[in-house]
Amino acid sequence: MLDAPDLLRLLHPFIAVTVVMPLIGVAVYFAVQTRQRRLAVANKTKTTIAPVVGKEHVRVGQWLSGAVVGLVLLGLAHPIFKTIARENAWAENPFRVVFVVAMYALTLAALVALYKSRTPLWRGVMATLTGTGLWLLGMQPGVFRRGYEWQVSHFYLGMAAAMLMIFALATLPEIYKSKRWRLTHAALNTVAVLLFISQGITGTRDLLEIPLHWQEPFIYQCDFQNKTC
Image (cartoon, rainbow, N blue to C red):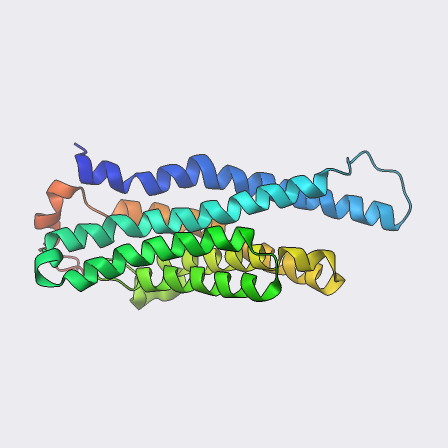
């Protein structure tokens, strides 16, 4: 039976499946369409792809970047605040609680400012602040990072995908100025798609490994290394 902590834990995969994954599919589709239209125009051949496809790709890409950062923040919130409550951190270490809340506020503020920034300098500053905020929150106690298998860690692969989304958002105006930037954008976002695929695999694995809330006191008494209870 699922209780409140289990239902809160399911918010992250629920939004990933219902919001982020569809946006990834639409963004990839528009990216391919944009590329095909650009090649057709360059070769002076007819195409049925509408000129508006490029603008739609940009719009969906902006939505995707924000959704990915928001999803990471949501995924980190459950273990962070659960650990804070369990350890009674407000009484023992109030600075830790204030720091976490401040980091959430500053990261969200930096993301909003990144969308509104117009100069390369400010886009770089806000992108750096957004990424730094995610990493500082990700290093908080309670976050399962799977450091002993970082190559297949849902946390590290997800953070890498989020960093690529932030970079894509910060460098968006540059792709209109240089072919090199367009190729870089395409290459990095191809890597991002592969990372998103890995998230589907590692996220499913982690859900299978996480016990229900009422089972935790019993399951965590097991010897995971020797696989005995």
